[in-house]
Image (cartoon, rainbow, N blue to C red):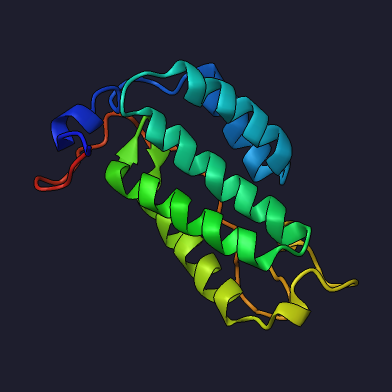
Length: 159
């Protein structure tokens, strides 16, 4: 059962917990496995619907880990799942610029879907932190950004 929008946003105006900040640093440094471990602890401890934010970020990171290992199918599945969780929290939650992360992850998903499976994880191709991957130009690595928590959210947007 899907909780009400007001219920989902409970906690979004709180400052990010230390575990989220640590997980964001790991994510942005390309330490996707470590990010998973850090955010999983936070996700398991959180009982409010806010836990979906942590799960969404975690799944985007695991998707990038799959891509680095050449698992296109797993990456696509986890990008899609992570995006589904994150959409509830746009434009921002706990200082995380969710709308930008969604846009970055969607661009990454489209690029990964466009690649033939032979090119995924091929030796000698740059990994995600380089900003280009598998011959696809452009910035494909989603990044986690913080925004001021006092930013005014336009009316009509959930969080």
